[in-house]
Image (tube, rainbow, N blue to C red; front, side, top):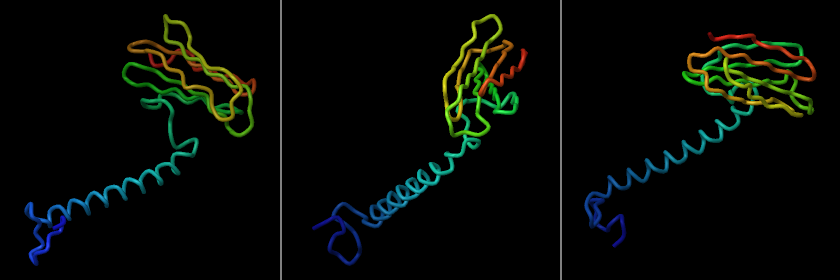
Length: 145
């Protein structure tokens, strides 16, 4: 006597087999849909502009010849990242973020795509961000005051 039972009613020894069979099918469909979602989500997330590495909403974007400086703001934090205009080869990049009255936090090095993210606590504080790609530097000045 297995899970499916031997009677013509489709019932198992524990009770209704239709419910367990339906639950099994639902679990299999859920697993299949989840796997497809992971595969499709992984391919869509590979584009540089599609996904942000910072949490919060975009607050300011400063574009320049070799890239752009992106600043994001959540309720209590600010985040910044510098993104190269043409990713690929390694070049000197940096990003720096400072809340008024605090020391700046930064990331610098030879990167292919971006420098950062850097995050600072910025609840009710002005912030200033600076980004650089291949020697071209831009700053936001004091913003979000």
